[in-house]
Length: 329
Image (cartoon, rainbow, N blue to C red; front, side):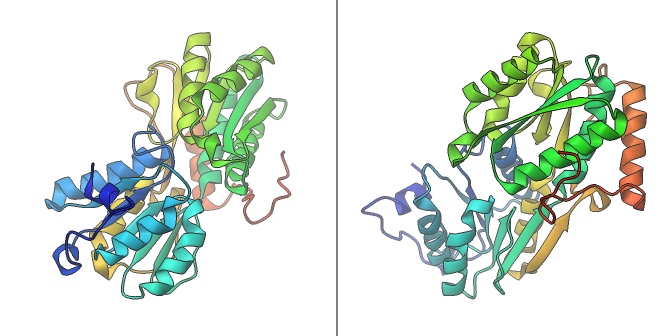
């Protein structure tokens, strides 16, 4: 049992003083855990890289219920951890309360904006990366039908979907894109069985490439795609290694960079609104030994052209979070 888990127990007591851990940053992983092979795992990679490079240590906890969000934040703040990083939009309400109560502690929240003077809000241009893998999906598809499996049905995941469809249609205006969301509760992030079922249904409708933007649920999407002999597209972390030759590419959302940068700045963390996208290395796509054989020169050229167009402004990718009237959905 970790020290932080003890903090969250009913009989917990603070075993160390705030001054003793003032230099230790902390990270709170969202439901699904730090080994979800996607969003949380990218965050863990960033924290681990910081620790390995600096010789420092960090505190962590993997949530098992919604009720733990505020409690975990308060316990870390009371123990003196600074900064405290949390992964996911669902921390917003708890952070609003806790940040106000601990004005001398710096916080960083990923995927949501919290307007407090001691909070860094980190958001990503996921629509840009989704556009790129949409181009790749259309170029790789033989049937002209591709799929999208989202996690929890929220505007953020609709943002992924809208960018993906726009990229698909840019490469093949006649393509069909099948879309499904896994659910409407946080359980949708960690349901690989449902992910597998949705993927099989999409394959039954002709999809031969499926993009998963669903956290741990995506593991089921990628596994089923490999089993059924079609391509999948990973998300957040580089998931190409999970099924070499079957994962066409992965949309990289550099959550690891967001965590690494926050830990590096430490208690001097610059607060405010931060956006990571293609232009500053926060969004990209993955090519490595695991997908080099299937990510052909034709696909690569099309995706690189799209990337250049986004960077120079000649390609405008619709942001669903700013305007929910997605023109291609």
